[in-house]
Each structure stands twice: as structure tokens, then as C-alpha cells.
Length: 122
Image (cartoon, rainbow, N blue to C red):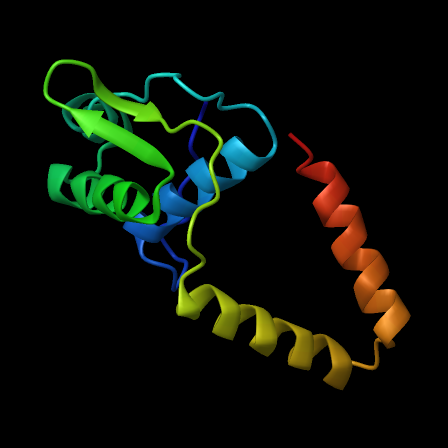
């Protein structure tokens, strides 16, 4: 998986890493048991501070998307239900509100959600 970073984005780099890995898991490009690069390797390859990568991995582990151990490094967790952070639900509510204010109907929003849901079918 190739990660792409937008250094001018207001989204912190560690969240960009986290978000791209979550999307990779959802769309099937990252499979359960698949190894992720080590923190050091990802930091060196991308030119990002190791602490930034470490923070992204810690969040992913806390949310249940990856497992880490000293011998095997970070691997994609088996497909289990993960807890949805309140921040994610708040963000979804905000995005739906923005779509409504832009003039989209309920059906248009639901169709858009269905489209993105199907794109990430694993």
C-alpha cells in the first residue's frame, strides 16, 4: 500500500496515515494478517518523523484495526467489530449537515453513502 500525504492539509499527518490504512482495510487492499511496514521503515521511506508514525499506529491499535507485538511488528487485525469513536460519529453528523445545507436531498445523501459503502465492500 502506498500512502500519500498532503503536507498542506489541515489534517495532521498521523491522521492521514490512520485514515488511509482504515480505507485500505475497508476496500480490501489490506487483508487481515498482512504486515504493515515498521514504524522506522515507514518514517524513513516517507520522510516523516518516527513519532508521527508511532502515533498513527497507536491510534489504529487502540481502535482495533491493527495488532502489534515486538516479534511480528504491526499486522492488520482479523475482521472483528471495532468500536466507533464518538469523534467519527460527530464528524459524520457534521458532513451530513453540510450536505443538507448544500441542497442535497435525503435520497441523494443516502445514494452517495451507498455508493461509497459499495466501493469499500470487503
